[in-house]
Image (cartoon, rainbow, N blue to C red):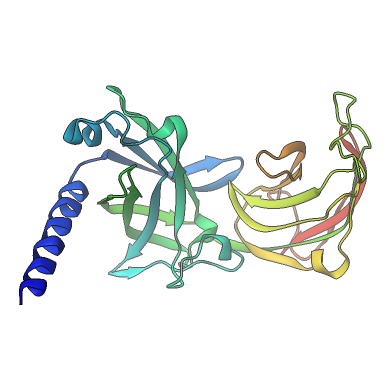
Length: 294
C-alpha cells in the first residue's frame, strides 16, 4: 500500500509540473495571410510570434534552454476534419495521413529575450487535398520541446475562420535525364576535399513548390547526377500558374553547398506539351530535363 501511495505522489508531482510547464504561453500571436506568394507558388503564410522568456522567469534559470530544440507543428482542418495532402506531398504528411508542416527552433531561435521573435510557415495551396473554390479552415499549431531538465513544454493555439479561394490545380510532371556539375565551384575550389577518394561533390536535387519538397535524390562522389528511371515521371500537384523550383546542392553532413536553383514557369505552358531545359551556366556544366503540365 505504501509503495502504491508513494507512486501516486511521485506521479502527481510529475503531472503537476508537466502541466504547469505546458500552460506557459510561448506563442503569443498567430497571423494568417491567404493568397501569399512564395517563390512563385500561391498559398497561405502562417506567422508565429513567440518568446521563451516565460520559461526562464518561471524557473529562475537562465540555462534552462541550453541546447534545446523545439518544434512548431501546423495542421489544418475543415468542418472538423484534418486536411489531407495532395498528390506528391508525402514529405509533409504525419503518421495519421494528415498534412503537417514542422518548423524546427534551435540555437538563437530558442534563446529567451525581452523581444518577441517571428517565424513563418508557408503552405502551398497545391498541397491541400481540397476542391477548387471557397473554403473556411482552422489553423492548428502546437509548439513542443523539452528543456535542459527534461521537462516537456507544450502549447496549442488555433486560428479559426480562415477563408480563402483555392485555385484550380494541374499535374506537373518532370523527367531528369542528367545534371553535370563543374569540377570546381564558383570560387575556383574543389567541392569536397578527401584524401582517399575523389573531390567530386555529392550532387543532390530537390524539387520544390514554394519551400515544400515534393521530390529529392542525391548521388555520391560524382559530378554527374544521373539516376535513370528513378528520376523519370516525377509528378505532383501544383496550383494553376505556380512556379516549380529545382534546387541543386552539394550534400554535406551539416551544411549543403549551393550549386544552382532553377525556376520553371507554368503560366505560359500548354497542357500536355513537354518543355525542354538544357541551359548550362554557372556551376552547371551540362544538363537535360523536360517537364509538362496537364
